[in-house]
Length: 182
Image (cartoon, rainbow, N blue to C red; front, side, top):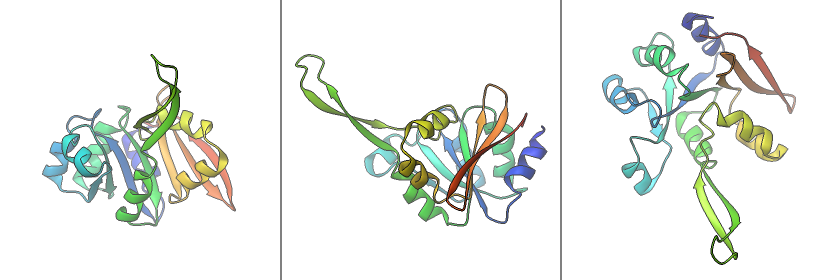
């Protein structure tokens, strides 16, 4: 499927389209945000947003036939660098929602003492390779909560170049695949 078909699939609904793009993988992202000036939010907060802006995840509003959106379709998609979502919510509400899933912690045994300690980290759910594994590993409530603000959530399956998306109808979550997008 060509990039024009990718655009037609992603922009098909009458809702807004957003991408969560990983600046750690897409080195030109921060430069292109300055050049094209799309509506965006960095998903890190506080000092992390300042210190890690070159590797942070960014939520960006996309518009059909917009130069920045065309760059995303041509240069970001296919490079493990983003997930996409259609939503009726505005970018501020979405950024707040998706920020809440970034920080994770787990209890582990301290390597020297064996005593339990809390290990904290960043969950890179915006990585198309990580997203499906994470969604399959969390309980139904967490998955429902994560997907609750998107009509459809899209990611690229790098093994067969298909576009996978999640959507919910009547409270039931579905997964669908569109083959060979790119």
